[in-house]
Length: 93
Length: 187
Image 1 (spheres, rainbow over the protein chains, first blue to last red):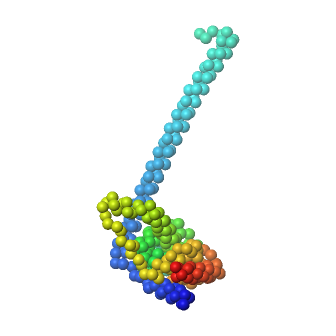
Image 2 (cartoon, rainbow over the protein chains, first blue to last red):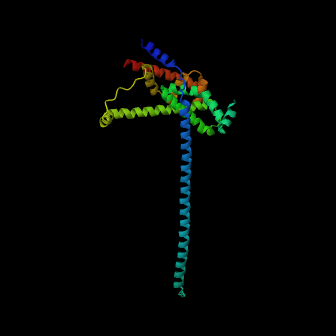
Image 3 (cartoon, rainbow over the protein chains, first blue to last red):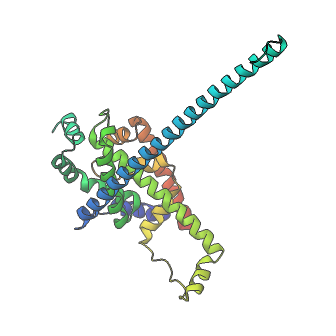
């Protein structure tokens, strides 16, 4: 009895009829496609803007770091010269 | 049209070829979705998503399989994603019911008690319950085997596996469906 019911259920499932696309399938599809295209191009623009921002931050950081390094090295060289000249008792002027 | 020629035209953005492709596969894709989702509106919705994906990612199609296989692979993936989404929603909603969140929300907006969910036919609802218990690969093999026109060879290409493996998956799925249905009938 139970097996018969199960078989009947499976047969009913097997016999599910094919469906046809509704009339507005194409319109809905076109809308989705346009939306996805727009989202995709927006995402590309956002990604490019982010990359540009990161690049400029990076360049600014490197430029700033190299400038500080130069100033520091000149300062420390002057300091060393001063110490040596004082130790050798060479007048500064 | 030979596949490689067709793919080349699709990649170059030929809209006529894309429309031809859609005319050729639309019905089968919708019906494949319907077999998985057992809901006409959802099937239409997901089939549209499938063709959007086909249009947007045709450049990534390497031509290692037939274009039909690729399209059905996208279809199956989208359907499984939708099923997972549904199951997640169901879990959240049952958690909400447990906490009576629906009643609270209804009380806040001054609404009435919700009616009982509209039930689909008993057969579809019980088969759906059983299919939800199947592992993904068994569900794919079993469902595709029920659709006219899919041979085990084609199913194996879609699932990137062997024909023997597909036969085994279908066998195991049938066995599990039968035993689970008998449990449901006992209740």
